[in-house]
Length: 275
Image 1 (cartoon, rainbow, N blue to C red):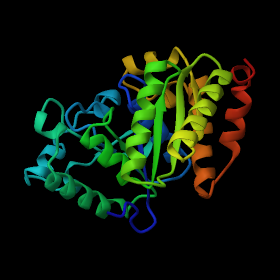
Image 2: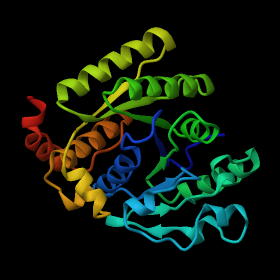
Image 3: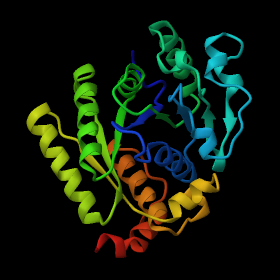
Image 4: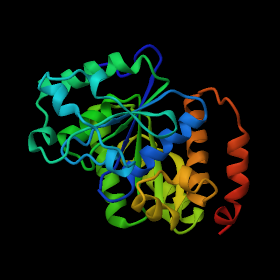
């Protein structure tokens, strides 16, 4: 099934392990792209344990469960998010949603393809791990962004995700984000080692989309149910996300409407980069 619809770019953000900041990065990356002038849709694909709405302090009336039981259309469950993004909320606490049948999955992605034509970018927040839903949504996308931390268990699980994704969809462009790095040097070391391993054993290189430092502004924003890029726009984490959005656009050959935020972000993050 072809992911891209009328030029829309579909990007899945996934992780081999839970708790690495995947959903938070997805939300803040979406807002950053929206602030750059893109029309952005966020599709919460963590069907059984959805928390995109909780992270952003939103209370949806309906979810994808209503789409699958045919009581609502995908258009009817859309909710507005911060800074102009639009969110497709998932369900939480329903086991059947965590293990979609092929028919249910096909129904959802066909509806998503129709909806995607109205947006410049669609970000899919995939469930963690290498379960059926995670791999389906990872390989549905035009490109896959894998989030890891420098911890060995996180890196090992990220490798497992990449291995399975490439087995299902050879040639899938994959990018790596290293979250919670102590320094940019650590993030670079992890990304370089990861790419070397995937090239050697899987025959496919993984490009680095950048890293995020461990930043106390992030948990503070989570507790307040606010995006850290809006609550703390000058923080190292916010500047790092802006750099990541620029790199993903550059790698994809997308048109960057203005490089001023990127230059500003690069200047402000110098202390972390030099560490």
